[in-house]
Length: 150
Image (cartoon, rainbow, N blue to C red; front, side, top):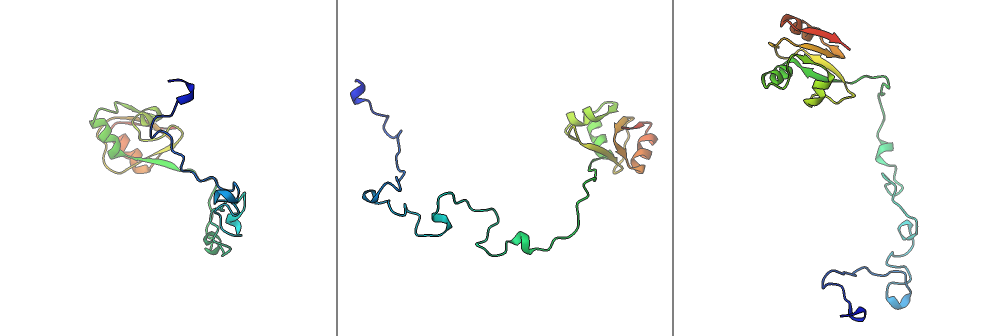
């Protein structure tokens, strides 16, 4: 074996790509398999997202309504029964703060959290989050817990 008879391993090289636009003798010259005329035959063509061949696109035909309040604050809601379940499983001890919620996957670290009043809480917890509903605050304090608003 020497440099004159080196060959790639059988089946490792596949050259099925047709070489287009390399002259008439190749059989793929002329229009280079793109057909005649039209946008798709031109170089630099890229289909615009939502383009419908000149017909008025759907996103422009459908009426717009309402508005988006840019100052809206979205809160991640966590119910009391969820907290009680985590206490029962031993994943929450006596304090609940953002770090504990993030570790247990109940919220992400930059989210605003609101405690909601569904279910009942038997455990005594010191909970410090951004907001509480009135019923949740009442239930936490009734169970002997403490409410801290961040």
